[in-house]
Image (cartoon, rainbow, N blue to C red; front, side, top):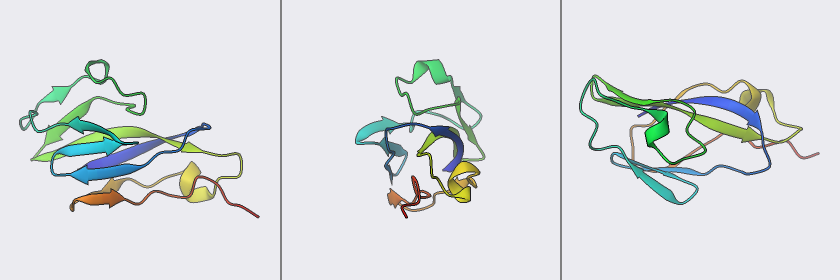
Length: 101
C-alpha cells in the first residue's frame, strides 16, 4: 500500500491501520480487496472525508492520497510529508500533529 499525504490545517486528528487490503481510518474500515490490478476506484465512490484521491492498484500495490491534518505548530515533516509504503498489518505511524513547547 502506497500512501501519499495532502497536509491540511484541521482540528481533527488521524489514525491509520492496515489489515491486508483494508485501511482503517479513525476506526472506519475501507476494504479495497475488490480492486484488480489496473483498476481505479473514484474518490467520489468512497464515503471518506480523509480520502483526497482516487484509489488505484498498480502492479498489485494500492495507491491513494489521504489528508494529513496538522495543528498551527506542526513540524516540517508534517507540513511536507513523505509518502509511506505500508507492507505489514498494524498501526501506521504518522508525523506529529504539532509540536508542543
